[in-house]
Image (cartoon, rainbow, N blue to C red):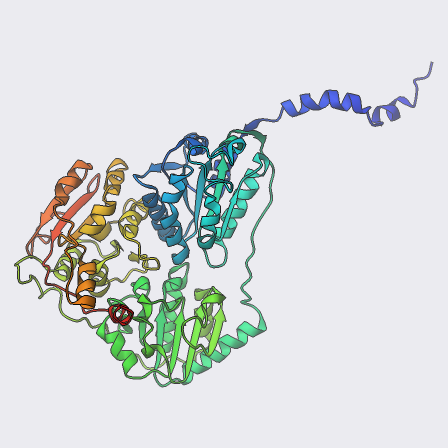
Length: 585
């Protein structure tokens, strides 16, 4: 009997649906299901995240548990959610990578809002992952509920975030996190927010295979941009008194190298905003220092001598960066503004030529179009006074400028200084000499106290071998000094230099300037050295000139707090901000 030749054909025919349904559960059973929280963390790891700052809480616990399972992630528990946000911002600034923070719902999220607004003002890519109560409880005013039916925390976040959304399906968790990361890192960078209800993070799902990328074309190759660069190069080449103003947008990527090459081709004076301090080496002969709050006479005089073409790169022309929107930044002929964010161009000054693009790319294009290098010129940074000679004030205590000078004498040249908000920022901006592009960081976009102290944690985690110094005041320490305990727990060898005058000095000075009198805004009594030791840090009290020079600030296994008692009579010149406030008082 011949075999039935139709059997092979029958075997290939579609099976009955009932048989497919019987087989389907067995096929799915072979695929591993995992919590959505695990998929979220896997997506972060795939994006290069190796550090997560967190404050624990019930609704975010599945995500933190997933972090614990990943040996490649360092989970840092800070003492406050704002500290976590500032620390993540410091890490992001130091590495140019995404900073990640995990907090719980309700008050956890709300405590992180200041750090979120800070990242928005600074253009720092952060991902804030917040837990949320289970969806079945939304609208029932559950404990710490932040859903759209109660506190609506996402609505609060949207004005200061590039993206703010909730994961409403566990299957979409990976895709939403990818979208959030891409949004944070593209264009003008900034913070994003994703909330995760507890039932979503615990739901078991099959990991999807996602192929996604992001492409941001700023039009660099377009004829219009090329023509704009041609025009700008021609203006600069023919200028009699060109000046280059540099903002912190030049700090990213190859920006500092491109700036140095361009400046040496143009042979024009270069000044920075306070936030961009160090992007151009301050000991370079073309540097005239900082213009703006805490700036240098050499920068103001350079502008006062007359400018026909001003090239501003990577700056938003903010209040601190323009000395209260000074008319000195209005050139007689051309103001050329380069920024990655088109919305910054023309916002505060009349711009004759705007170029939207990456700072390094545009500066390289300008340098290539300039004629043969001009004769080398020398300008040089000039300060109000010599910090080495102004050693002590009327009280006999060390002056702030002398303390900063002594620190730079005993610390490595590549030390990274983070500076907080207060009068100490003015002294640091003016008296520190910063040459490495990544040697100084101050977040004065929002000007939030604690931003410098807490960001030093992230900066140190980015490079454990580098010396990191956090310059702050006693008011900042009273407000955010608990993060020294985080540094001690993580064994971070940060030097916290606290310029201590026992008061909120800038506030008292401002009140005196406005009203001719002031209440006492005292932080006394705060024995900073004893508090530091209670947090697990080493401490030293500095009172006299020479104390720091005789101090060994070498390698340590944890933080060191310098309680530097400064002379109260030492003051920086008043800023135009006081005059502006007085007009409205």
